[in-house]
Amino acid sequence: MSLSLGIGIRTTAVSAVLTDGERTLWARQHARQSAADLTSVLLTIGQELPPEVRGASVRVSVGPEHARARRLNGLPREAGVRVLSDAVASNLGSFFASTPGFTRGSTIVECADGAFWAAVFDDAVVQEIVSVTETMGLILDAILPAAFAVALVRLDGRFVWHDGRRAIEGLAQQGTLAEASVRTAEAPDPASLLFDDAAGAARIDLTRVPLARDAGRRAATERAHRAGASVRALWVAGLIALTAAGVIPGGVAVLQGRLTRTELQTMPGERARLVAREQDARRYAHNLVALERFRAQHVSMLRQLAWLAALVPDSARLRWAQGDSTGWQLELVAPRVGSAIDAMSAPGVTEQAALLGPIRTTSGDGPAHERAVLSLKLLSRVVRDSLPTVDDEDAP
Image (cartoon, rainbow, N blue to C red; front, top):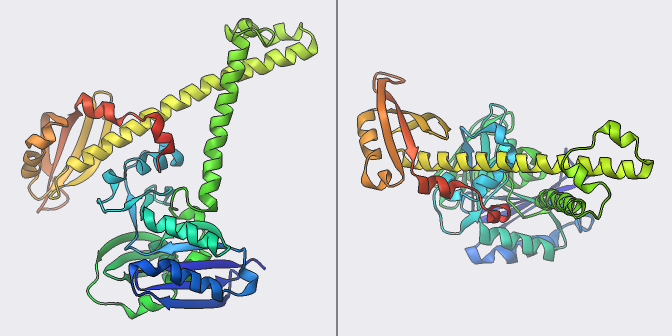
């Protein structure tokens, strides 16, 4: 029997649910009196855990006071989930409203309709969870936003779920989160006192949820993949250096590509295998360089798109964007699209981008909206800042 422990953290209470995948075997809930008592409440729950749970893995759901999830539309799918995760995590301010302490990014998951979900967490709370679960003798599997755990329990339809002064307004479709927003709560919802967050965390498929980066066993696995790629790249670089120095037989000829497979067959068996391996390493290193250039280009375009989205005023909606080395084309929809374009011509905006003509204006989605297609070119300073650096590989 495989046991799964889910813990739900809210500003008003901490819940815990133990399941075997089908049945709830054990549950507890303790009220919280202040933001400073999270550790003590978690330790209290840890002391009440059944003996068979000691050393088990745990998933922790975090409410909207300390974690926000957001659906990201328009990200380039061809860049790959890992590249997009790194790009969003290193540019959190471009995708999420600035909130003090919310500096821990997440992995990214792709929706069935092609959009992506990401999340941002209160870093201090994440660190506290990591520390306390270790003290409790539990293996932290992952930390996730409560919206996904609640959606799994609510199954279908719209729901409102409260966490202190915040409330999640979401839409669940077959147990999957389809929409989510956070608003200021007016009154507590009695349903939020149930175990939705903990029960959902215990049962949810973690491959479909944005998880706090570098926190828990799942994140450790992701770090191992990244480290493995770095080690392989270093190994190939060292092999090529030794080959170029003549330490490995046939090095210069292999590096210059003069030996063919037919020529290798005329060499003694062991040496032929060594030289063939060197040629494979050379091709592998070439592919690594090409992949890195591809990644850098997409990270740069993603950051440029984030800057452009931030330039669009609140009165307008960015319908689509397309960019290349010459600039960007945007389509805006607004009740008065001319006013939106004027706002984008303000001094603070023109320090980052130049408006190019012509501007094409047509009717919008309805009689109360207008639509405009305009061309923009980000200034060289902004484009330069969008290029990824070495530090981006270790971004939180």
